Amino acid sequence: KWTVGIDIGSVSTKAVLFNGEQVDSKIIPTGWSPSQAGQEVLERLLKPQGLTRDDISLLVGTGYGRIQQGMFDKTFSEITCHARGVHYLLPEACGLIDIGGQDSKVIGFGEKGKVEDFVLNDKCAAGTGRFLQVTAQTLGLEVSQLSALAEDADPADINSMCAVFAESEIIGLLAQGITVESIVAGLLKSIAKRISVMAGKIHFQDTVAFCGGVAQNQVLKDLLSQEIGCRLAVPPCPQAVGALGAAILGYEL
Amino acid sequence: KWTVGIDIGSVSTKAVLFNGEQVDSKIIPTGWSPSQAGQEVLERLLKPQGLTRDDISLLVGTGYGRIQQGMFDKTFSEITCHARGVHYLLPEACGLIDIGGQDSKVIGFGEKGKVEDFVLNDKCAAGTGRFLQVTAQTLGLEVSQLSALAEDADPADINSMCAVFAESEIIGLLAQGITVESIVAGLLKSIAKRISVMAGKIHFQDTVAFCGGVAQNQVLKDLLSQEIGCRLAVPPCPQAVGALGAAILGYEL
Ligand code: SF4
Image 1 (cartoon, each protein chain N blue to C red):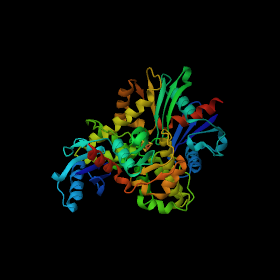
Image 2 (image 1 turned 90 degrees about the horizontal axis):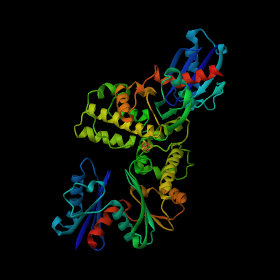
Image 3 (image 1 turned 135 degrees about the horizontal axis):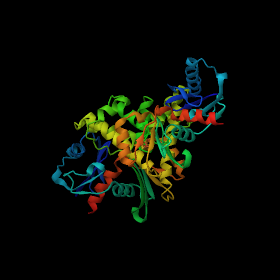
Image 4 (image 1 turned 60 degrees about the horizontal axis):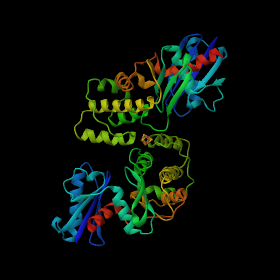
């Protein structure tokens, strides 16, 4: 029995093939057409396995792009799918923090990984991966370079909570001769602070899963762990946790 | 007796010369150095009048850049100065809305133009002139072009409240073939809505003064007037109202 979970996000589309365990996963950019991205990621997932759509018992959609797609047998919210994926990968986690390209969420689990409480931000770019993307761009950097740059740097004070105002602040700091390394460390610290404010509304005890593309940023992980006072564990393939959860939920139906 | 009010804002620095009435005003960009901008605008204000610093009984500062400047005899908050300036120019106004380059404020007056209540936003670029600047830039336009473009257009739906997310939304709308005119009208409508949410916290009755550089945008003025259900009156030189208020407060001391 095969199931596929597809998480169509605003930035990237993730797919996971599941048959009692995760067989493969694929990530592609969403681009302008969520439905095209959904079809394409499915093809890229199935082809190398010699499978076709007919071999899949249940195709499950999640993510903002799941809506108005005729392709899915079933859909679940991102919250439900992320929680299921994390509980499968890290059964010890008492919740999760997901910093996505255009939103961020903090979920607290009850018993057996059931969603007990959550906080979602999709209204303000600050506190999402978008903040890092916009500010990295101002510095002429890629998001993937930020962690290494910030590693040994003394974080500069970034006072603007707003992504737009932070851009101007960065330009001002550069003009004052503050190093790029310090500015990057300051940016990571400022996003860690914002996420910890969201996380403060959830009662975390011990291990919290850290998901989303931004979870690959080691310095941010450490800063966030300090801010919220919990151990953070990054699951394998932290971007595809929602897609995995969708596939598992389909498998369990 | 001569007094000067200088309002050092994040974007522009305004100065007014007062001797019982407004004699002259000057506006220059603040640039990187608020103190330099303060000195320069003062010189540009006094020179054509054949005055020097010694002729000025009181030099009053306001605006975010007033802090840590040795140049002022006295400083007042922007709220106090804006209220005083508006009450002088438009005694019938029951309050004011100021959309500045980097903040926005709504002030409700009690008797004799005294500040009774106010709401300030300097944390989020959406709902400030910065929103228009950032989005105009995305469209390859100047802020000064927006009103004329939007005049007869059917406003497009702009769903993002965030300036950063609105940028991506605009790019998506352009890709869908929505006209620039409709998008601009949609942007003005969306900022009018945000300001009206702020204004909703103040009890306005009749005429409200509309200040700040953005007040020159006629379409925004009309949209905002509709949203809050009050008549809006734009004072002469709407950007320099705070500087005028500072000069008057100095004159009255
Ligand atoms: S604070 Fe900045 S990033 Fe957040 S909603 Fe406002 S404009 Fe967007």
